[in-house]
Image 1 (spheres, rainbow, N blue to C red):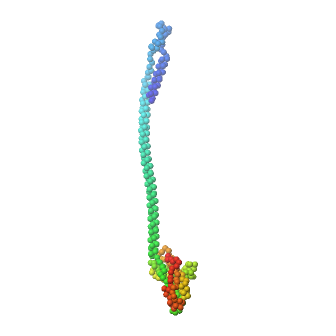
Image 2: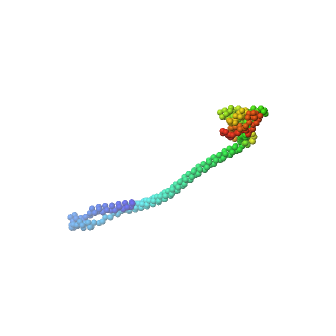
Image 3: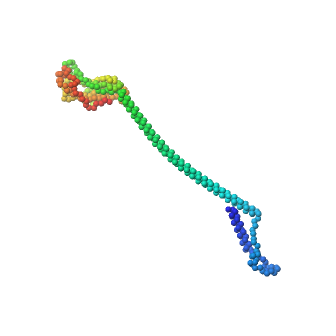
Length: 307
């Protein structure tokens, strides 16, 4: 670049010098001005006889010009090297950017795969947790069922076993008959604090339909497995027995007891049935004892329960 400027400057300087030389014509002395009296020379001959002008640089200027050319060449070489370096760097940057793009794409897919794996992990974790909760609930239910089964097998069970009828009074002077209810412990463990209430379903022992256990708590018993015990008797006069032909008597008996091996400590057995006299004996015959259990028809009525 500098070398070109210098050369341009030199050409311009030479051109200017030539123009100046052309403008200042070197004329020979005219015939009138000469002292030797020669004739005039025409202008064309005078121009043709002019000498060319040549600008010659001195050695110092030549050296400076050479140095300037060398420095200009070096500068151009340095610029070219810088351009080559910049192009190489740009190429490397483009390659690096391409590699980074590839790496970024791989990272994206890896991240996406990681997210999918995380979602699947959470899903299966929730599923396994739900399964564990379900299994735990099933185990709890199984334990409860096993516990209830064990309690059912071990607890006391008081159930109705039967009834009996007995005459009250001396032979030939019987005034009444009593009904007795028998109960049996069918369980594998004893029943404690067993209390029985018996009587007419509408009688004083069942006020408002509820048994009056408080009247009989002093007569509580412990009933061993397979043992039978009897509850309070119900007494009927002879005329009341005769009345049972047309109007059955409704009897009720309730037993309350405690279980040792049971979450529900207090249990209830309740039975209600109607008794009808179907015998042919009259009062006189009844007075001498002509009465048997087969002379009565007994059938359940109401809601019987054994808890």
